[in-house]
Image (cartoon, rainbow, N blue to C red; front, side, top):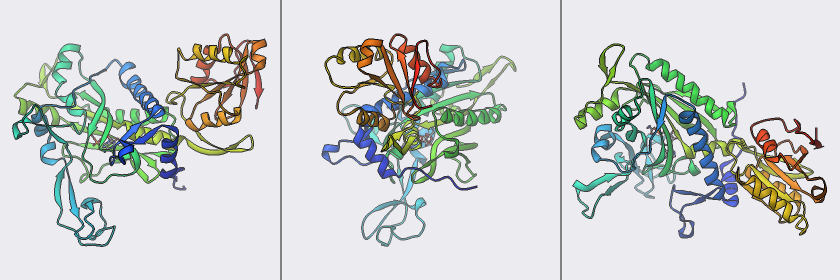
Amino acid sequence: MTEAKPKVDMEKLVSLCRRRGFIFPSSEIYGGLSSCWDYGPLGVELKRNIKQAWWRAVVQQRDDMVGIDASILMHPQVWQASGHVEGFSDPLVDCKNCHKRWRSDELEGDKCPECGGELTEPRLFNLMFKTFVGPVEDEASVVYLRPETAQGMFVNFENVLNTTRKRLPFGIAQIGKSFRNEVTTGNFIFRCREFEQMEIEFFVKPGTDKQWFDYWVEERLNWYVSLGIKKENLKLRQHDKEELAHYARDCYDIDYLYPMGWAEMEGIANRGDFDLVQHAKSSGKNLNYYDEESKEHIVPYIIEPSAGVDRTALAVLCDAYDEDVADGEARVLLHLHPSIAPIKVAVLPLSRKETLTPLAKEVYAELRQQWMISYDEAQSIGRRYRRQDEIGTPFCVTVDFESLEDKQVTIRERDSLRQIRVPIEGLKATLQAKLDGEDLFVLPDGGKIWKGG
Ligand code: GAP
């Protein structure tokens, strides 16, 4: 079997993201801030669509899950109990010659990879960002920016249990920002100091944890495929004993084939009863669950599928990137799945002539009630199609002079370049069906094939 290769190099992708307004360096006018990124007008839509797809799959469409939105700043004892104050650190070395800093566990030899200089002894560096609550900056007022959203769900276990009357097995889901003062940075949005996580804490009866762990590994892998990511670019990787985090009994990473190689996009861990036991001990609260069946108090085990929004965004962009020739001209296109494409449909009047504008604007106004729509009348129709292809817009609707007579428009499909002509009346329903995956050549009443086939 031939090994899969990444299709796009990072430089090309970064350039496209910058050029088209997906992602900019943070505070760019001041030279940027290392490993912080701003999502632009298209990036914010892509990210929202990813988060919405996740929420729909894991909360909206399930009976056994509820969502929360916990605060980023939490009681400092949370991070004592979780083990983060003690152990959430990377071993660091400095080059005595060029003063560059490295993670010693990522180095191959004992010399500086940049200049070959001698390195200092490793010392541990805690990855949590520290700050202070209130006006006094002393030890008593230290708080941390959360390095994961997970703890917000553990400490709310009892609140959720008591207010929702959920019984085991059930889960809590959360999407939110996390912060880590990462030592090794780079690879665009793969490793950021501020990033977003989509995490589930799924509480189960001890003894059923293995079965639920397997269930979630499969469920989460399938979710990425449903976003349009190719199966051959996804891989499951089980952690060996040495690699397992202090809280984990078992863990699989879902790796994606990024431009720099295979790397973690999501981790699914069996955390056992570690978290509830730790927080019960530290808070003095009873975090047990009364099991009606066995008439016993038990501490649930937790299965944790923990995904990164930014790493998912990077994966879908890499996976969608393509270059081909359309109508005799080279084009760059993103084969984004319609559910996550930032713009669903572009409305393009064939020309800027005043006679066409009112009808084109009318079509645009109608469609934007339902989706993010783009309206573009500048330059030739070919250039405008390519602009939409490059940002992954699945369909273009063209309003031409015949439209004024026959009240029909053409729909052009991004990937196949096929076109159909359909009545404006019912256009919304036709587009909805196509966005949901119906073949373009399944025609509505009064529609006809226009191009391709
Ligand atoms: N609660 C468990 C936890 O946080 P993790 O493996 O450290 O586990 C989970 O993080 C996911 O969060 C990763 O798989 C990745 O997608 C994302 N992630 C972690 N650190 C990140 C960073 N510095 N930049 C971007 N995403 C990150």
